[in-house]
Length: 191
Image 1: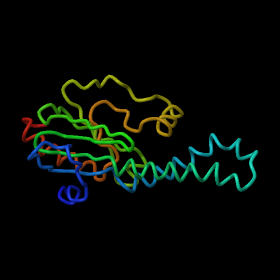
Image 2 (image 1 turned 30 degrees about the vertical axis):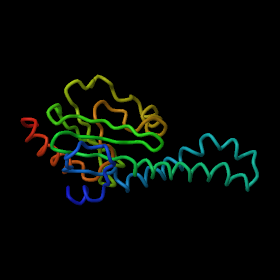
Image 3 (image 1 turned 90 degrees about the vertical axis):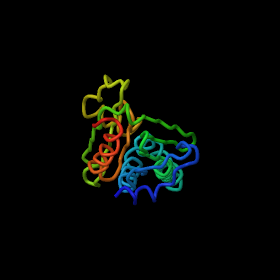
Image 4 (image 1 turned 60 degrees about the vertical axis):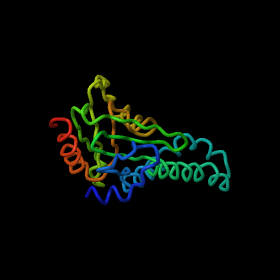
């Protein structure tokens, strides 16, 4: 499992230190990205444009409705391609961003816990999220309450709004978490 994922993910220059070799490197699930891009564009774009479409002729429909859907879907695909999760013997890393790039590192000896979560849609496509808590991570931030609030957060806000390092929407999350525990645990005294 790890070798296939490592071979398919190209690690950008400068993300790892000289001589540091990846044990595991992967992108978010392509199936989940495709499903979410489709759902979000179909549900998200109509809400602000319904009133506009009522006042525009049929040719305007393509400009107002379809163009933003295509742009958003391509953005999600680019975001997936530009998101990379890497495990090395020394640390875990996450790099994300389309126009700008942010890289977050957690040294192996600071990893305290791995939390695997799967939403309904993630379970259907076989992916999930691994939240890595480390020494110094603020875990007091709570989840949004109420179905409408959670729906709003899922549709319009940052998908990975969890404390710590977040490997979001990865295929086979439980197997990946075990792989991480095996390698991190041997360097950090057990996990």
